[in-house]
Image 1 (cartoon, helix red, strand yellow):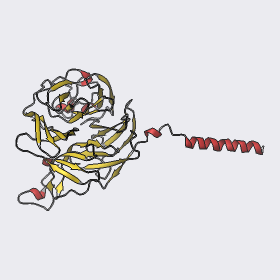
Image 2 (cartoon, one colour; image 1 turned 60 degrees about the horizontal axis):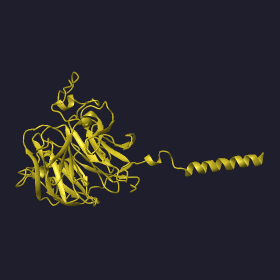
Image 3 (cartoon, helix red, strand yellow; image 1 turned 180 degrees about the horizontal axis):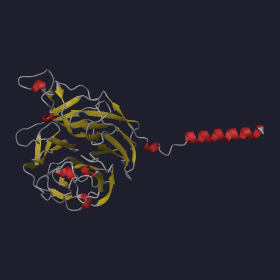
Length: 383
């Protein structure tokens, strides 16, 4: 009997050891992020940030931010008034480059000679040739402007003008995001707050290449009218929201990103979905999140986990004030973090994301949020 009990005990111990040694079925999906409240460092020159329009990481893991100085209240920019009303603060330049430690490396931007600066800053992207592309989403921001990384003007596509529509190929329509595809030297533009399409142009000549709407269909203006429920907003974008079966993109088409395998991910923000395409505009599939979300929708920005397979999509949801970690192959939510609030790690309208090669995630907020936060992953990307 004693011998038999000993054998059972040994078997139990062996089983427990095997269980402990074996990786959990969810181990590969344990990606989480922790806020780093020390990033960024205090800004120089008494600067203060406005709303964060766009963000991007460069090849050296510097973080580039396009912020909105004109979104600051008189109270926030008191030192810039004439006469000054307070010691704090001065609006920071629109374009700021931070190093990995959170120090400002370069800062520039604003109206100048030879180009038109956006009336409300939104999208920012870098290529591999030392250029920065940026745009805006104000009513007349029908253009995208190209600069060198030290702020010298290179080229402009479109112009400050009344909307030209989703069929026009000479301008954009309040674009929300830009992605540079090195393989084809093309710019994929989430176009945008005015138009209802993805627009693709050559990164050097700005020549039109192709465009598409939801499900890969030709884009249409205006959207089919959906009457709002009694007592709700009659704003056009809001009235056409909340419908994941909408056959056209709503307003805004808010992000575009390309994975290493060439799939294109597009945020159809007010329709609470991410649609997936091939680079030629062929529709592949879609993922819908919190489809009952109203207001500004649930899919604000996407970043790709920087491993070889881009295993995860990291999705900002500025309405629900959280970030979702999503398995890219099937769209399953495996984790999320964040909640509404003003403390470190909380969000108010998390609007734009950037991610560096080490998997550090950076989040920028609009409305009264007006800040950037860094989140450190609990694992490193495997390349």
